[in-house]
Image (tube, rainbow, N blue to C red):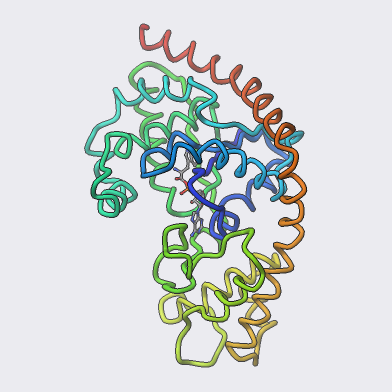
Length: 324
Ligand code: TYM
């Protein structure tokens, strides 16, 4: 299967990115043809610092490697290195109804959040995402739940193109981790864990152990005592159970069984220790790679070369079909 996914270089990667997306990528690279991307062109649609961007891209590549992506098993690319993504986005834009873009949840949320930064790029964001996916004839897109709507729009665009200009694109499927599709904020378990939730509710993957402990110990839960999964009534504990089960690779039911009789604070301490020991080897791998930027740059330029061949093949076909 051909697989594509990406993450914006707009801050440190967090536990939600890992459990929602990267954990799946690391498994999928073993038996599939995978392309994993640093989507810098998407990152510029919200406020950012141009001076910092090159380092952010390199840091994210280093993190990908530290987290287990292996350049011998998958292709690692930076979106802006391949102009074909932009070329296809323009062409797909010409068949994408503006109403579809305006109804996207993420567009509405970002419009509200960045009132002074409502640009056309933010609206066209899902068209570029569709281009990222379709240009490689991807069949599976492993993401967290918040990106599902964008992948569905990609399917709509691909079908529309195929109907209008003849069979061209494979229709990609979204793939989500059963329990990790939506990791919630520790400080507000009714909203998604994200880089922008003020830091308290979000665990960065390479955060200092004391801070991880502090954040988990102060995670918002409920006033009951039983460690039981119930998203509606016990969102905080359910979220912690999700994280625990994913880090241990067991089911939520098994996690409940293991933690039976423990108090909330005992559970939090166990989870904090588990998270720290899970992340520790990844952190030392990252530190080791930090001094090898030239090697990492080389991986990205090799990735771009390999991806370009596939991207150009699609572009030639698309342009011919569109009469260009
Ligand atoms: P981004 O950068 O916001 O998020 C990257 C990935 O992390 C997942 N994720 C989560 N999963 C579970 N719980 C959470 N709290 C959580 N927070 C983030 C996201 O679902 C995503 O999989 N537009 C995309 C990037 C993109 C892309 C693509 C993805 C661009 N082109 C093509 C797939 C295919 C985005 O902004 O993701």
